[in-house]
Amino acid sequence: QVQLVESGGGLVQAGGSLRLSCAASGRTLSTYKMGWFRQAPGKEREFVAAIRWTGGTYTADSVKGRFTISRDNAKNTVYLQMNSLKPEDTAVYYCACGSDSNYYFGYDYWGQGTQVTVSS
Image (cartoon, rainbow, N blue to C red; front, top):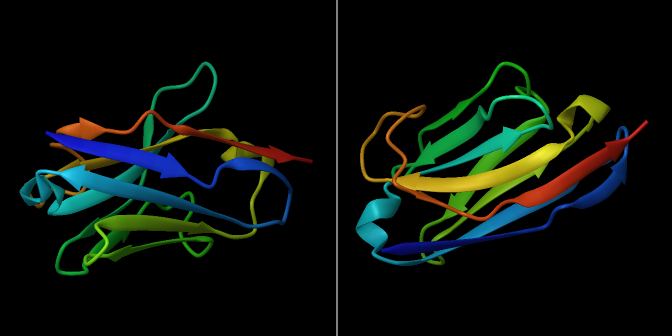
C-alpha cells in the first residue's frame, strides 16, 4: 500500500503561481512513476504531468511551458510548480503513482486531491 498526501493548493489570481507537493509513504516500489492529474467541475479527469524515478518527464500540451514537475526521491515527494496560472486551470489536482513506465496509464494509488482555484 502507498499513501499519497497532497498539499499546496489554494486560491490565486490569474498570472500567479502555486507549488503543489505530494508525499508518498509505504511501498515505495510502487512510486516508480508519479503523476499529477486534474478534474474541473463537470469535466473528466485529465493528465497534467508525470515523472519517472529516473527523472524522465512528460507534460500535457495544455500546461507545457507553465507547469513543471519534479521529484525528490530521497523524500519520496513529487512537486508541481504552476506558473502563469489561468482561470481554466481551476480544478481539483490529484497526485498518483504506479510501478510501470507509462506516463498516462497504470496508476495504482491516488491521493485525495487538493483544490486549486484561479480567479480572473
